[in-house]
Amino acid sequence: MKNIIIISVEQRQSVSASVQEVLTQFGCFIKTRLGITDSSKEKCSQTGLIILEFIGSEKEISSITEKLAAIKGVKVKTVSI
Image (cartoon, rainbow, N blue to C red; front, side, top):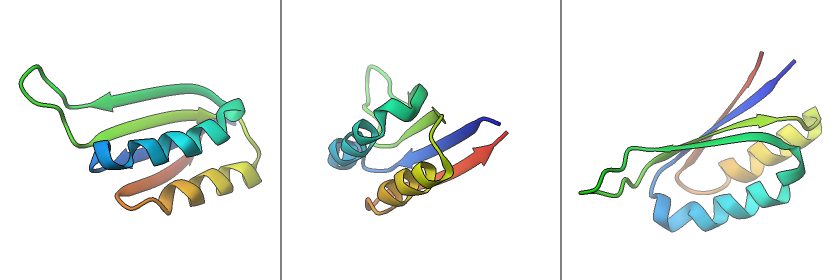
């Protein structure tokens, strides 16, 4: 079974450091990380989407999602496939 964590970030510039700090804490359990923004040459997007393939245990999944969800402007969903 694969665990996918989807992270929606609003106000990217103000919360990105907090999000990165949590991701660094769990870095050994992140197999794949994909970041998506709707930026262009004319405009830097304030929203972003991060998709993680997470290989940690259920306890670690619960811990990372709780820490991320505690950051204002961050929404988290987990999908197991």
